[in-house]
Image (tube, rainbow, N blue to C red; front, side, top):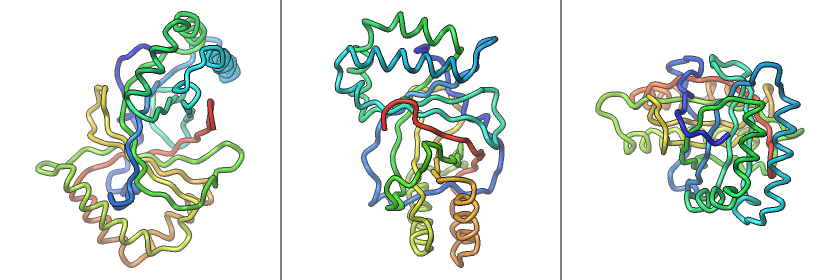
Length: 253
């Protein structure tokens, strides 16, 4: 499952003019590293086979004794409202690029067995990106039943715009969103391609507990007096495509 090729999240369903969730850079945490696999099941295989492969990987990690592998968290996304050629997306999350390197080295002794197990179930493209939390609703572990609704945006900078312009638009958006009640059960992140062949410049991810929360958050934002201006400023900076996915933890907590 560790074939490094390309990231194709730009196939997310188009919804230009919809604004990505963002937050003041003053509240941003340090960026972590995400390893992405965009996968399709091989003929005759399905989710139960993927769970078996995951269990095999977890068993190998337990025997290796690597702190970096033990701290790795893996997420599975399946399409809900999305235009995509893939059956699912799998993310491995590490504290840093250094932690990723150490984890890869530690797993190398069992890589052939792990690759064979996953290779019998799925065919994947993969890439690396940085990941930074840009909004913390302060609601703690609000996701229940190990399933969340994920709102994603794949964004391309408009001509003449750069990441400083993104930061300015995000800061303004943060001033609007911070004045709206009801966003405690909501977190947001930004991802920037690191090792990837993708036509977009950055990604945003909003985490909602369920569809009801997603609808309530969206309604509260659109009804707020500052939404129109925040939307205008964000639209000046980049053009974004959006989609919705179901997400759950596969490894870690």
